[in-house]
Image (cartoon, rainbow, N blue to C red; front, side, top):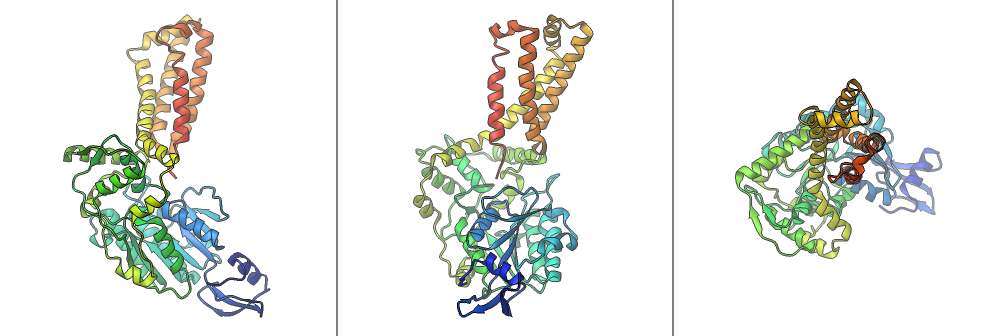
Length: 471
């Protein structure tokens, strides 16, 4: 679309009556005639991106904002961005009434739905996110006259192998049932400079001393993130085709372990021994991922991923490439184009350490509290009595400290409260250092170093805070 003004300037001028529409192209997307010096061919100016904090959504928002579009983002927990955009805080799974979406669609010309969740958990619902919430959104689009809708599904959705893929398919059907200019995109494993979910896991596995090989994984056709974003940009043109389902897959098929090995070379790691995990070990890892998800974390290793990977992630790119005139770029070629930086190598090495840090740190606080209430009772209460408190006060202080430790540990392990648990752990560690110095100063020269060990704990606490965010 040729522009003499940025879309935001065109949109503002049109609203202020400074430009006259020549003809309508969708809602709010018009051809303007302002003089011989200015003509515009029309296009979508304000885009609503649902799931704008995810891997695809955030990258797409940045690309469109750089090209001058006005961006409105929807996310459960909006985050600051470098580029200007407006935000609405909405839990898609809970927004099952079209009226909940209506305020988001004011002056919107097109909607891109990037929202998704891998598996049902206490805080996530595949039915809510992939079917009920977006059905309400698309009904709201019909009522508001927002005709152009781009919907991200998943490769293999038609198999309905899991609750994830079956709900993705029903979400597609909710959109296709409406009289809209819709396009359904089914991407394979998406690889880009940014990393989240499966793409982040691949980097973490590539940094291990050995290359783990998971059993029962079929071939995949990874697609580069830039190709995905470029597809959406082209679909936002007024003359773009619609009412189509496109599979977005890369040009090359490979095994999951081959892709991990590719990233290992990109990270400049030496060749490593491949360890094929037995079925029971892999199953234990997937179930551990389910347990972490029950605590509010979002690990990519879960039983849904296990089931989906048995079928692989391959497809037919011909319809996509014909419609969009895009030649998918090979992942290995793109990795070679941008060598891994020290930041990427740090991230890869820290990725699988993160669950260990939070698991061990949370367990440390809980076990400390349980020991204080159990076999270590006399030692703990004895320290307090040594500081001058009577038996009753010493017992009360010991119980209070133990319970505080248990609560802090539980808060760290539970993702929604992890940040608060880490703040509390930091403060109580400082408090223990100060109170211990006042009541029992000799602990500073104790050979086992109980007071000295507080400071490494504080540093680990700060490290956990630094790596808490996923995106």
